[in-house]
Image 1: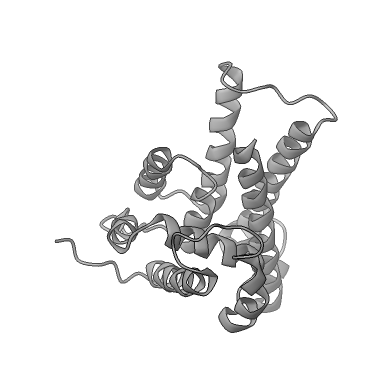
Image 2 (image 1 turned 90 degrees about the vertical axis):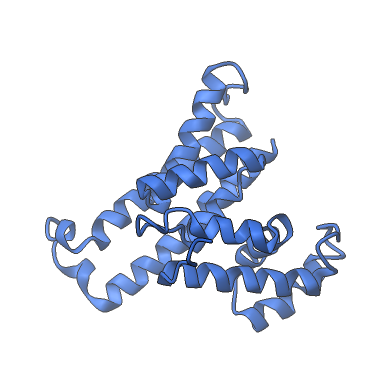
Length: 209
């Protein structure tokens, strides 16, 4: 049996899963429907108790509902041997993929290649673009909802790429030292987390189309 990963990212991911289990229990159990009456009615209390956003609550609930403890343990081991385990934000991004087999394949690739969350989001965008180009999806029309989703997705990926560049201390020297200060870095990380939430939401909506 593989030794469980003790990386900080994995520890945070495990806590996210445990929070998801608590949220599922508060929502009526794993077999309960995700309807507004059953699930969303408890979210205000859960936000205060778990100190999580509504989006995080939704994703934690989805993770705990769709992955048994054994399946989750396997997810945590992806990339662990190479020192590149998946983080909470990697998994939240992956949960926008409806088909579990496809999700696992991309998760393994992200862990093996050490993709950042931003790179993983970009790969999801590229996969959907290739799918549309091959005729398996409709091409977004300018001005329509699909076009707006695609445009928002691209802007979010570009912004995350830019923020990741600034947070890299070596790269940030090219634009000045402001991004390396503790306060600026903290605010930029918070903004990046919010933008990742936008990207995840767009992916979730696009996947439901």
